[in-house]
Length: 291
Image (tube, rainbow, N blue to C red; front, side, top):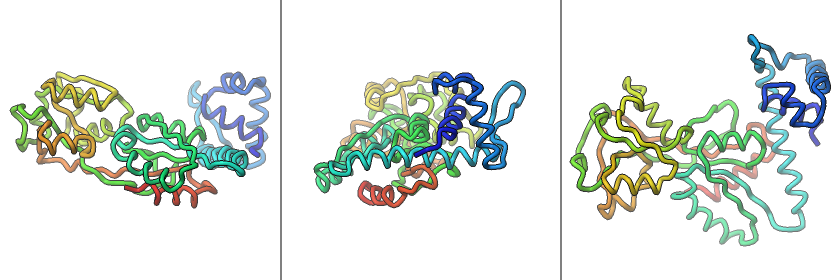
């Protein structure tokens, strides 16, 4: 359903390079330029400009990108609905690691009991990766813990949780009340760049004049399970959402460090492409998946 010129525009936005866009679309570079010029003439607006040698979007281009991305996703979703109109419904969405592993299983169990024939695929990745896939039209919606540009998406609050500091139960800081700055001498175990947990911690540190680099002993891992195991073994402390360590805190397998000078509560967001015609469907799924 999408005009081929719009597909060309989206390809240029993904690559920010006319030559690479032409290669991705298997057309010539002059054809790419012609498609973009035709779109700009049709809408009487300039979509791209050069800053030095770097291609960038104008304000009109940003607006057109948001609308075109939503239209492309709706086209993909509509084709899937038509393909399965006489068969089973398909749902493909994304969730960040904390949500996908510790919150979503119970919600999905309820959903699959209510709709046993539903074809379900949940993609678990960090916030940045999920937003990229949502922009590319590969996901119906995403449930994320990280920050996101609100002007690009329609969103609803999915849950609200606190980021807590934890350590081994026999660690000297277990049960202590400390300021965020007083923890800088500890080995800190963190998630990879792009994770919502890490970004929230970085913002809290920044508000107090600190950064992750102020921790002289910093270790990074992409697995929540690995981080918890390392903390339990006494390798250091970590910050994670309360749902991740609720069971361990209850049975005393981990100790909590109460941070006195920082509000580390945060909203999880359920979001989809802005202006999508399938917004009522996504709101329906929100109600079915909400904790």
